[in-house]
Image: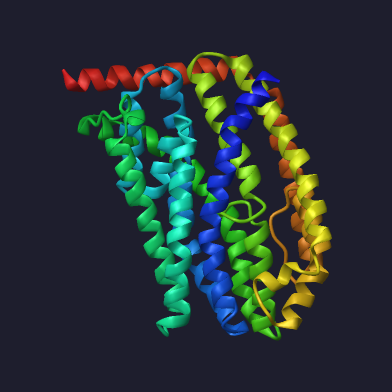
Length: 378
């Protein structure tokens, strides 16, 4: 129960952060979708192209910071956190670096307030640019970009001037470049994993343009995609993403502190929470299946097709499946089966991992990096 409280303390506000971040995308998409069916499909195709060509790589590289920022905090090496986070901004992935910097120290409430402020900024800006300026789809994209920079600036001010970041506000230029090798050691495998996962589903969105009645197909697919895809900021999966963030913070902190048993307990607690949440979310979605499509479009055909596909969406949530295609139930079930097997294997790895060995390796890596930095300084 104690570990459940610790995980919930991090997970609950981070879920709210993730949902508010996701709503930036969904507000833009909803406003574009209410312009016309073609606008909704156009936004989906443009977003998929951006994800395939850039965002997947940056997000994957930044994922390596989950361990690199959390473990120094567990060993009380506060000065290393900011230096490691800055290695990610070189590429750049400024917002992702800030997220991991805040999360590694469990500074979730500041992230929540900043994300809510960003959402309040985004809604009127998006409405004006989409409906009043005549920019339509372009206005939705511009509003999203402005809101992201607003988010980055607010977090930057917090890091610079608030006392809660004082212990980690130590920036040493040499340490940043010394951390680059370690960053790539974790970042490249993470980037490969994320890119393969994203591309598999983004390509389906792009290929939907080749189907008959492509506007309808792409519109329905994009609604499904933005609800069920777990590797992006999307509606349902922001909840397990929040739980996963709590797991990453708790496990990396405990490994850094040399507590392998506590790290193992945290991992098991997270698996149980995620399973329970998936059943609850599936039930709620199924009960709301007739109204869900209207949030994105007024087109009756789009809404009806979304309603018909929601039972499969519910199954995908329970099985941690990732995506679906309107005219590919066979492909869908194949992907569902593959993702289920992957989930089982990853659960077994987490359950039977030699956590003591991981804790030893973590502390050796952290202190090795510290000694290298001190030698370079001398």
